[in-house]
Amino acid sequence: MGVPARHYLPLAQALAARGIAVAIHEWRGLGSSNRRAGRRADWGYRELLQLDLPAARAALQAFWPQASWLIGGHSLGGQLAMLHAALGTAPCVGVVLVASGSPYWRVFRHGRWLAAAYALAPALARLRGHFPGRGIGFAGNEARGVIADWAHSGRSGRYAARDMATDLDHALGCVRAPILGVRMIDDWLAPAASLAHLLDKAPLAPRTLVTLSAAELASPATHFAWMQAPEPVAAAVSHWIGGLRPFPTDTRT
Image (cartoon, rainbow, N blue to C red; front, side, top):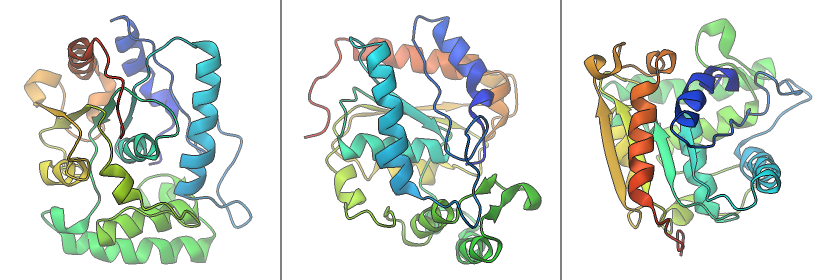
């Protein structure tokens, strides 16, 4: 949420150096996107999951038609990667979560403060026409719909998207693709309980957990600091992918 794609270039380069082809998806409204959230421009998880990610996947499929695909993400991007895999619209041989987890307020140490934020953020977004994240120092300038869907999952612990009939939690329960969860030990935005709550939505999926310390990262083991020196994360992902070959074929049903 609020992180342009260019900030993930060091991770992509570190993975590429290990022989893993990487494409970085730019979320609608951020960085190089030609759209910006406002009163006349709104979207939510439905658009991201049913329009944008499939469009990116189609472009990549045309470029690399024989590739075996994994999807991954950081923070909210990890949640959306899980949901994309759950929708089953395109084969996916694995899911990578980096510093990600469910935003459900009950799994956080000071969750009552988060519960209050989940009530206030959508109201602020409606008042301003978008969520002014840059101005208040949290996330980016986000669309009202994205904030509404994110806040819903934070309040209820369940995923749903406006104008989308799919039971997303039920769909997550059908995921069989292996999942790698990489957690930073001092990451209060995605603590162990948050990651566990997200992973438990996919009980059929084999899971591998890696926790990185400040010593292993040579940087603070926090939600964003790892992005400046992502070699340990790339190493963990590369090692895990090596263990997946030959890739599984039945990843959802």
